[in-house]
Amino acid sequence: MAARRPDDPSAAAAARGIERVLRAEQAAQAQLAAADRQAQALLEAARDGARALVERALERGARRQAAHDAALERRLAARRASARAAAQALAPVDDARWAAAVERLAARLSGATGARADDIASGAADDAR
Image (cartoon, one colour):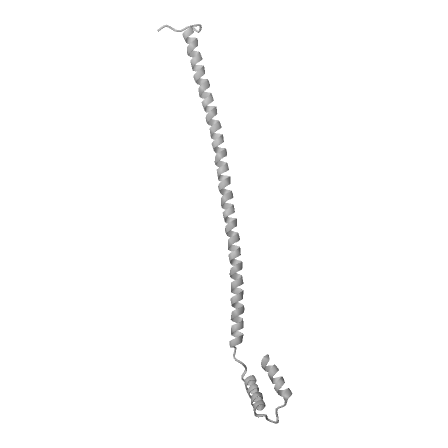
């Protein structure tokens, strides 16, 4: 095979073909790099969106939990108040107060001369406490 000369038309055509292939390869590499940058930007945007979604869900959950806690505290306070009132209503009355009240009532009902109206009234005030 004979060596080709640089001024050979087929050598020039081959060189042009090689240059076209190299330019096409460089253009493809540039497109791949651009596509990679675009994909990275889309991926970062998707991550940002996912983070925002999670943050909103956490905030919503925290608000619901706070509302639930407040409602639970209100119900608990109401039940405690009810329990205190029931405990006070069921608390045993002092035996001395009962005895004094019974004596006053007996004196009042029997019309005993030793019972004065103000004694009975003061005893009723004591019983009301």
